[in-house]
Length: 71
Image 1 (cartoon, helix red, strand yellow):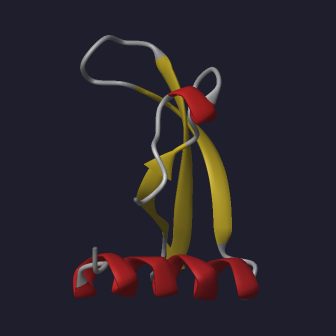
Image 2 (cartoon, helix red, strand yellow):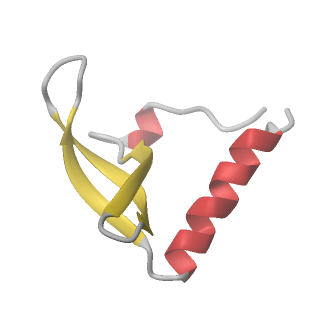
């Protein structure tokens, strides 16, 4: 299974943010159930503010139970 181009581009952005020290872990609230989620974000800057771009959240519980490796 090939990884789609847009997913690879997002991953490259995430890696670049980490390399540049522009990666943050934020506690957010899930819209679906109101539970806390710990979200990996790239941090950007404008003239007057920080811009947090969410890339995904950390798995709750045991992530090995949630995913199957490629076959």
